[in-house]
Amino acid sequence: MQGLGETREPGAGRSSAAQRRLVFEHTVEGLFRFSLSSRLSAQAWQALRGVGIDLARPLLPAYSDEAWKRGLEIAVADLYPLLPREEAWRQLGREVVNGMTHTLMGRAMVGVARLLGPLRMLRRLNNTLRSADNYVEAHITELSPTACEVGLNEVMEQPSYYQGFLEACVALAGGRRVRTRVVSREGRGALFHVEWEE
Image (cartoon, rainbow, N blue to C red; front, side, top):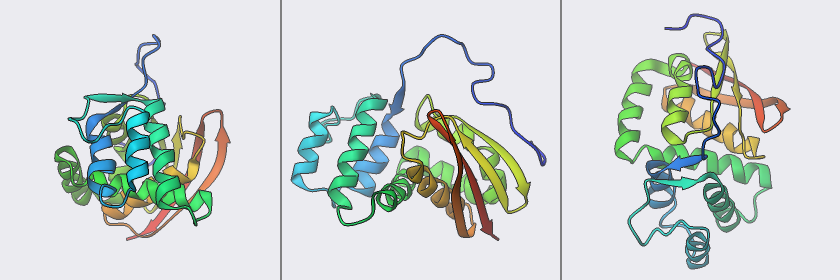
């Protein structure tokens, strides 16, 4: 178990061979079948089919990161047309966590997160992210028992989506009054400051 300090760097120990970027079935299921299914318009369902996410059929084991990103863009445009873009993406980040809690894998993760509490849950964030897809990685720098910096190697050009995701994860683990902000952007990734009350 990590003490105060930094976890291993993203990509450590991984083959340097390029790998196809995939989002796994339960991530797609959680967001589109559980969290958003009753709220998306018929036009959004049709647009999702157009990018390869056909929710009328059994889900595929994995989807390309491009299909996932386009699916998220469709959901943001359909559900939150009146919200400022950053707030819409932040809300969608919260929705993906809420949806995951209804999947088989997600229910198990919820129980573990609640037992661990926010700080120890964040220490395991890289494992959580790797169960959702095969390309987003995190590194954590612990600043105090109720604050961390979280670096993500990929934010899909939408860091506010990951702010919502992080806020929902910490709240799920028992954190109260969770606050996040983007500290910096580098390449495809971003560094976030995350703090909460116990």
